[in-house]
Length: 71
Image (cartoon, rainbow, N blue to C red; front, side, top):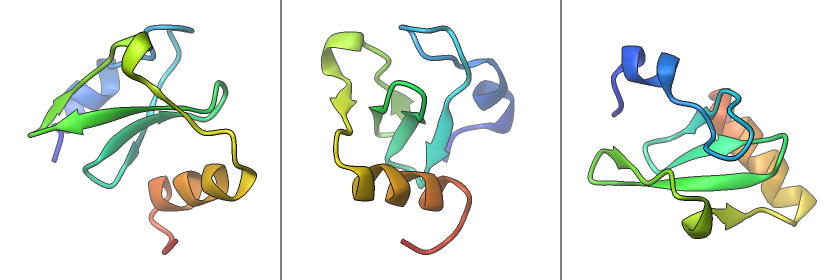
């Protein structure tokens, strides 16, 4: 799990806006629909390695998981 202080300062490398923590797997930018993976507790904030979330249902699942709802 990422430290809360670290989460407060991490931003998307593309739009420089805050990211949502999705479980312990991703940091998610809902504005651009891009997910950045977390490998062994280390965020991989490389634009070229971000995962595009084009599917509306997957986008909603990411949002639900980030808010703590089952999904």
